[in-house]
Image 1 (cartoon, rainbow, N blue to C red):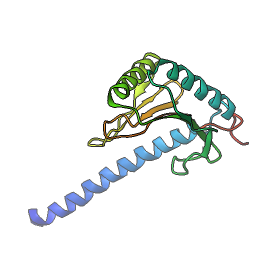
Image 2 (cartoon, rainbow, N blue to C red; image 1 turned 180 degrees about the vertical axis):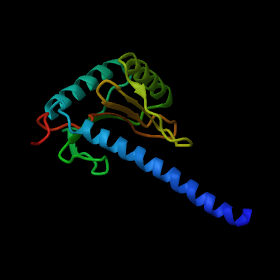
Image 3 (cartoon, helix red, strand yellow; image 1 turned 135 degrees about the vertical axis):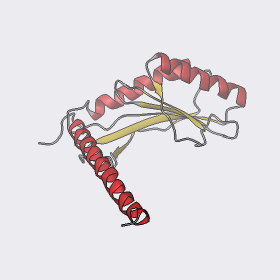
Image 4 (tube, rainbow, N blue to C red; image 1 turned 60 degrees about the horizontal axis):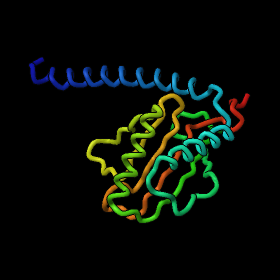
Length: 175
């Protein structure tokens, strides 16, 4: 065989090996993720209380006041694409501040970031070249997510939302 005949074969073998290693790694991660997600969690009621605590504490630090609440909690089953198991629920609630002028909006964004990072929350990284109109911070200890949306000058409505991680409604997975 000539060198040019070996090149496609070498590429195929190399590609197959790389894919095999990637599949093994992904399968191992999937099993670990499934095991982690099958463990007991806080209850849905505890998650709602934690959300209300985060909201109240954050609102007390903001220089702007909400014009409306989002009302009741919005509960939804966790995405079926998150490697299961099914039956876990995520919930969130928030506040709307309406059309906030640029200067108070910037102050609110700084206060939001400063307060929550002081509480242990960390920035959530968005994909590169992603338009950021919000600040998203996640607590690595319990996976609650706080979002201040509408922080750009182009936005008209500023909203605050806190979301829970996926939890078992009664705290334990079904038997």
